[in-house]
Length: 246
Image 1 (cartoon, one colour):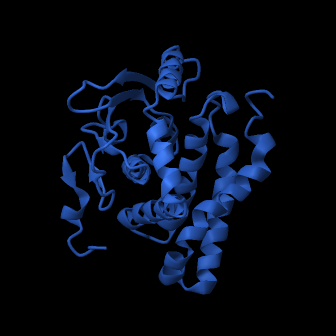
Image 2: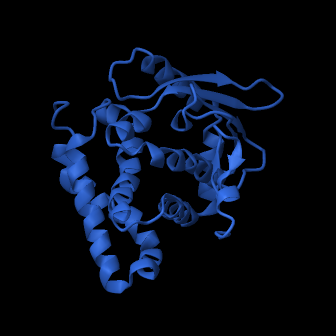
């Protein structure tokens, strides 16, 4: 399969996949628009996603585990595009994306999530991540992630991952959706909370920093992912949303 048609050949499968994203937030869409218009909104989001599929940059296809990150992040991009047409606030769009992912993980049994979290720190998993990170620094694909994996310092964290380039940041910039990226960065807290992992981060590329500096504690206390925390300003977004407490 050539690079140019990798996504095109999977268009039917990808097009159907966005339903996994929209279904968990259908109640909120109905509250916002009513039953009839919510159905229209969902159809518009699906159509918008279909338009994005041919534009996805090739970063290695099935050989790159981060391909799915790019594909799934674009579910949020499609929702963003449509809801902006309805003058929905960015914060509220971000919350819908957060709710969708949170509800997805909440459906998984807790013991499965714990196993997934423990595997991240296994010796074999860390070796594989280091190998993939090393290859990323060849920068074979312009829209790929570039990253580095290091062992914990034995005191403050158990594993460190630093990203100096992000495929989502680059693709969303091309799509004039830079303002949405910090809300997607915040989803990392959703993921690692589900796995029972404490994540610390003082910088993200999505907030204009020079890297994303992930520090993981396997037996720590995961932080609450909402309201979001934008690390470039080191302040909780809820400070500017005093009337939105839920």
